[in-house]
Image (cartoon, rainbow, N blue to C red; front, top):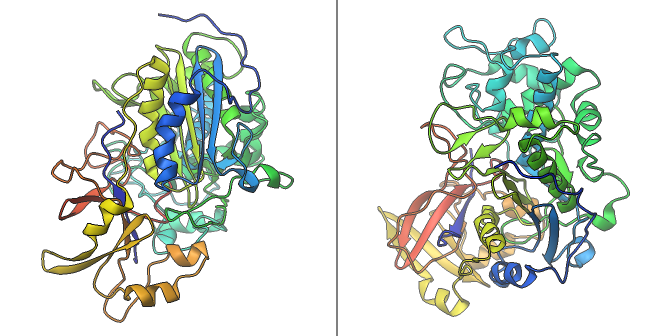
Length: 492
């Protein structure tokens, strides 16, 4: 399958029961909040280097909300707490919460085989006579691959659009499990989407309707939708790819449970408030199911996973998400009663690097802001390099370096074939010799250091699983680079 490799700048790492707070007030923006200067200092390098086109930061501190917007939002204006973004795989948190609610109501159990929720005659793959359970789908331990077979070879601007129930059933019939269910964690949008679809059938009315009625409405999340609804045009952020070119929205059908939701920072802060209340023993709607999703599911020390949530070594809960034009992060620290929301209108996992920085801002010890190289520092890196017998051509365009492999058109020819269409820019270009490998390079002055694990990759305790992690592919002079598999597997 043709792949486009986006080369990312190797950054230094950004670096008892509580009393129930008052319900947070509705906040759209906080231009004079206590942490605005510190947040702006962390964000500005990402805007200046054109890493992000626009971003909203939401901070939660023991019931107090702060929302700060930077860059471009709807209609080119600065974004605020009501600006809508695709939140991608953060949707999985909500899918797992629906599962936990159904378990609490004794409609299903965590060990219910998913096949029991599907129509008679539908074949669900097994391995070693082990059936896939609902819990295993929520934990990415089902053995299902990352994507259904019919989507793996596709390169479309809207990769999940039009993927319906019948296609899902055909793919289940054609799928062979990579490992027996329950033996290894392998991050799977296929599995999460199947979980949402199966719950929608079991609970009636389909996944979108059931999630709205049983999760979104009880939590008061009035600005969280399946896709961008009509009438919200003035609130929609324009998604952009890694080159800040406009992208089309993603749509979902049968796999909606994997990443269909659109939301704003204010709603995600309300989710954090509810999760913290649940952790503290609250009795409001959905608090008991939330506590179930927060329980450690793996028998190990250190990082763990809940149902839908990742749990880091410090006991903080988080999940991120990415689509063709957006990136998101939602996390909370139940011990400190703090939380962070990051909604970016650019498809880059570098936005995750801001999460730890925001926690440090709330602690009053902000880290040194990220430093990206200037154009003057990038100029000497342009040229031709040899890497294990392969010639790579590095060119500078604006504030970016691009790497061209064998078979890639020369710079002038490439420009003549590049259009403003986001779909054209994100597709690999073919030649008679091989698939082109034009890649964006973000170069660091710290090339001697090993490439760190991506902040967007869940720190899975078991080997062999997790999301697609960036792998180092070259050391170009003093230019350290990482490669990350791109679109459509960019969806996290």
